[in-house]
Image 1 (cartoon, rainbow, N blue to C red):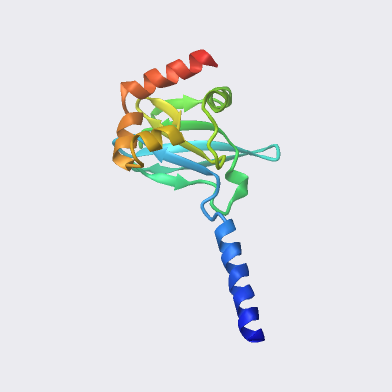
Image 2 (tube, helix red, strand yellow; image 1 turned 90 degrees about the vertical axis):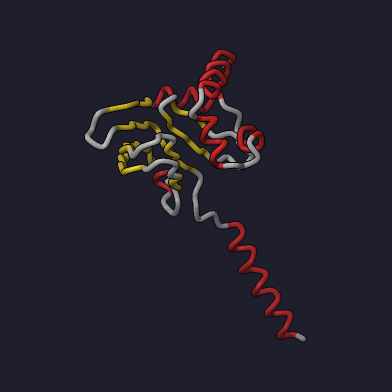
Amino acid sequence: MKRNTIQFFVILQFTILFTTCDPSGNLFLTSGYEYNVMVRSFYDHNGTIIERFGEFYPELVFAVAARHSEYSNIISIQVETMNGTVLASYTPEYLTILRKAYPKNKDQRESWIFTEKGLFLKTDEIRRRYEFDKEKILAYYRSDEAVKDLQELLKTE
């Protein structure tokens, strides 16, 4: 009986440990472009600016801060073609404006999506509206409707 109780508590502790750990982090980047792009992203880690860059293929969702907390505070994003032509550049000021304008997620994760139409923060409202269908959500952020919604959101800010 005593051994079963100890085993139960050990299993319970491991279960709690694994359910409270978040291996994916709190920051996600999604490419809404319909072709491969290079993304340069800049992060502030205790006053030190860190640059990362990599190739993003269409619909790629990248967990930036997975096991690397130094990448959890994104401050700037630049999207380029594969040959280096800048398609879009989002400044720290612009990211700050978007963070203030968008409603906060319950879990306080940031999920940024960049498309030909602009840069957006994915919201729980849009996920629910499109019933968590990845294709429909992506189509929304590629649409003029998303741009209009963002403009309305920025007007109220």
